[in-house]
Length: 187
Figure 1 (tube, helix red, strand yellow):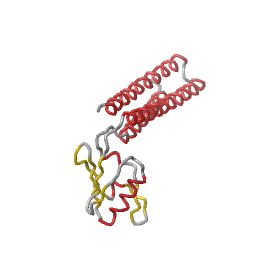
Figure 2 (cartoon, rainbow, N blue to C red):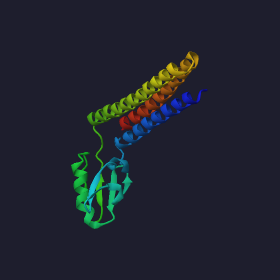
Figure 3 (spheres, helix red, strand yellow):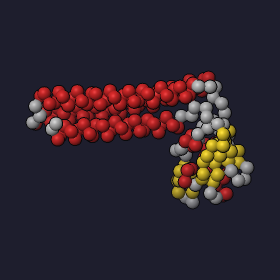
Figure 4 (tube, rainbow, N blue to C red):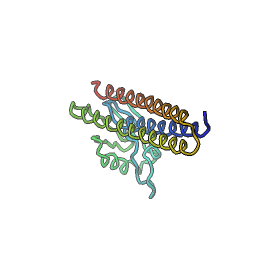
């Protein structure tokens, strides 16, 4: 296989893997009824004037399937953390007992489950857009290479490989979505 074609394929694969990784991280943030420390990922608190991720100023754990415990390393951070959680509009009502913040994760209503499935589908579609974008870029690079020096049969072979790569990543995307839907809809 031509070195340039191999480089194009490797680059496309890397971009597609990034799209899947991003999808996985976004799906983790969508709650499925069970308490999960990942639900608070992406929240930032003002820590001595610096915008700091919540996970870097507190210990975040689950006590049981319905409770998240946030234990700040400094007691002075209790109120700012509580305010950030309320402001994030996650549907949680944090309870501050002076030592830890306890978050009771309410059970999901049928309507809320459907909304979360819609959100998961949107994330999966965004990932597929990323996959198609990577495919388009790789195909264009192959066409440019063909204009310069690549024989037509090698170009066709490369395009077939790029499409197969895209298809395999689309299947991964669908599997992640299917798994998340099942998780969300399980009562």
